[in-house]
Every structure is written in C-alpha cells, then in structure tokens.
Image (cartoon, rainbow, N blue to C red):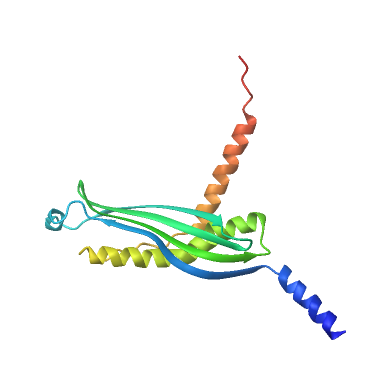
Length: 167
C-alpha cells in the first residue's frame, strides 16, 4: 500500500510545474571601435543607444533555449565610439507550464535572468576597449513582454476588422 502512495505521489510531482536553469552562455559577442584612436581625443559625453530583442526555441520536450540579443551603440558627437553586440543565451527546463504562462516565462522571466550576464559581458568588453565602464540600467522585461503582447493583440484585432476587398 505504501508503494502505491509513493507511485501516486511521484506522478503528482511530474504534473507539478517545474522550472530549472540548466546553462547560461555567450552565443555571440562582437565589439567594434571604428573611430579609435581619434575618439579618445574627444570629450567623453557619450550618447548611448540600446536595442534588445528576445527569442526562444524548443531544444527538446522540456528544454528551451532563450536568447537575449543586445546591441549597444555609443556615439560622441557624430562619431561612433563603439558598438557591442551580444547574444546571451540560456537553456531552461520548463515542465507543466503551458500557454500564456509559458510565453511569459520564455519572453520575460528567462530574459530577466539572462540580462545581468549580458550586462557584465558588455561592461567587460567596453573596458577592454579602453572606454569608461558602462553600467546599463535594469530592464523591465515584464513590461516589454506585456507591450508586445498588447501590440500583437491589437494588430490581430485590426486585421480581423478589415473587410476583404474585392475587385
């Protein structure tokens, strides 16, 4: 009888939502300083632009690769001081989570985990390029995900409202 209870408890645990970080790695990293060494003679008042994107793909039944892609462009006046591009990736085990919750997990929660690693890699390569430290401000991936979801829903609604044209 105890064996039946343990078997039942084991199957219940398999149905429980599970999440685990399995690996974090740099998938791609690029640094360019196209105006060196002339840019070092300029007064350092950079204009920094950050572009970011996330993507994910299914690796196996319960494993997903999430990739946070970031491009940092720093300009001094009209001159590009440096450009850093990184793809910070992670493999995550996700089980028992589906639909909107899975989308939220892969589109917001996982990138939030990856961001500090990407920020550290960017800061390190900028320093090695002989530029002052660049400490990127935290990013609210939940808000970004919610905006993207809302925009997608609005686009879907506007496409559904449009009447087909016949010629």
